[in-house]
Figure 1 (cartoon, rainbow, N blue to C red):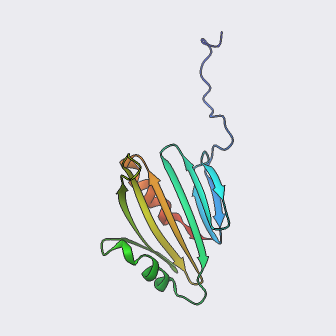
Figure 2: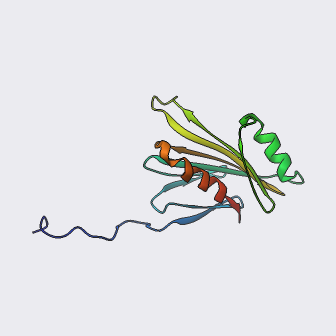
Figure 3: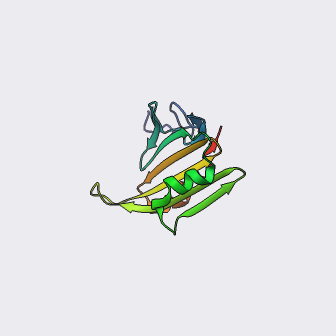
Amino acid sequence: RSSSAPAPTVVLGYRRAPVRITHEGWSLTVPGDFAERRTAEEWWGGGPGRQITLAAVPTGSMSAQAFVNQFAADLGDEALTHRSGELVGRAKITTDPSSGLEIAVLDGYSAVPGSGAAIRIEFDDAGDWQWALDMWRSLAPG
């Protein structure tokens, strides 16, 4: 009887809709099916073929631009930039073959006065580069 029953159209699971996470004063909306881990130093979330690591620190009187200049300096001249109000960011997408399988990686930094964040987004499908950029650009204080 079960083989003749139509497949359910509703996805079953713990979380289906996107979830807003916060870590050390920063927030990000991630897919609801992501598993997650949290330590005092970082938040990690991931699912099949995609994972995100987020770390954040208070920067005291350091300006947002100074934080990005200092911590994103090794991204090079071709790094992408992002500005939204007081938020300043830089990121770069590269590939990492160290695991034996080549994956794409977005390393990014974002800052506002008083707080800075580092984000690493790893994705298996090269077609997910726009998703990774959108995730980085959506990182915001809050």
